[in-house]
Image 1 (cartoon, chains in turn yellow, purple):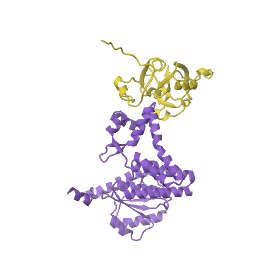
Image 2: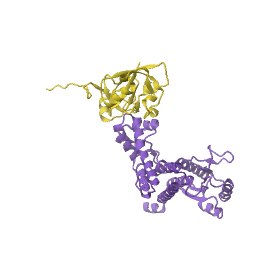
Image 3: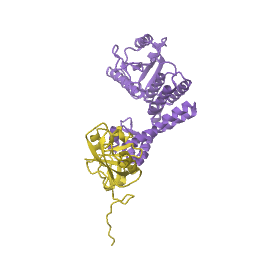
Image 4: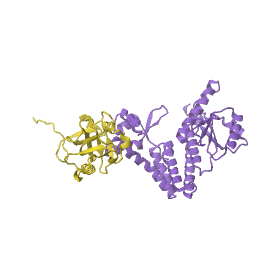
Length: 159
Length: 304
């Protein structure tokens, strides 16, 4: 008798991937994931995939940005944290909301470069320190990686 | 004219692979897809909007971005119309409206494609330009054609319009045509007469038996309008009066209590019908014959 073993889905780079809602961040039920791209929990986000080490943990605020650096999704927690509505933020430039907190960061650490790279091709997760535009003194450590489909950058705000 | 296909909530939800509650939540949060209401107040989604959203969801990263993309896809009809009218191509303008009608109701096609397209041309070329004149004449013809294709009045509601707009190159005149069209499609009998036509007005009013009176446009002065309104009142007695696109703001004109209709023809037609129906129910309570749906004699015969 053949024994079946549960395996975790892997991305292009072989790292395990997880699914999450682009609005509430919840993991979809296995059967719901197959049926629809729309989150069955909140109904207000699309189910996205990202490497497990990048994907948001429950309650972590995050944004999804495309390769033109336009905001494509803002999670419910990020809406609260940044004080913006997703409907207003979508199609705006990410720099309208977040800017690098460290003005002297080298090019490799530049927030926008990291985002474009992550949105273009999957790779190792990177980190950057960011702050809200026009807000000084409050910094966030951001985790940046790829998500999709389609390919986009995932920016998770932590701590 | 292409008929617009509509979907019930359950059908639209199945097509998008979501629950009906999710669809209603999207309507509340994003205002899209925007359903019409059936006679029984049930939601009716246009097939084109739902298909456009389904395609956008497959390629989207969020509901917001998918909706934004779906909306953009629908706004191409306005661009197509503006392009056709700018190029003086009547056939292409007609085709742009046909395409709009495939995705929307007549009311929404007029409000979301035809009138915004005309406004855009007015802004771009000025209302004294040949382009504007060409576009306004085409729009006037289109609206009159649509009026002729509207079903015959199904209610005993009659509305008298005092037309104080300019000629057919006046944007207010086009908005008034749209208001007449929407009221006609809702089953009311609408008669528009220029406010300068006073002679024999009493006979016309007696024959029509209006439930409400609308005065539309700004091109005729208050004295002429007052004279016309006086004649109507003398013939029909006190009637609810509303003004449409007469430069008034607020819900009512302070001095006279006249109702001010919203500038958007669809919203104005809803307000106007409510006004006429209110007057009608008052008349019913007072013992006058009840207003009910009037069945066409042919329909009754066919049923018999």
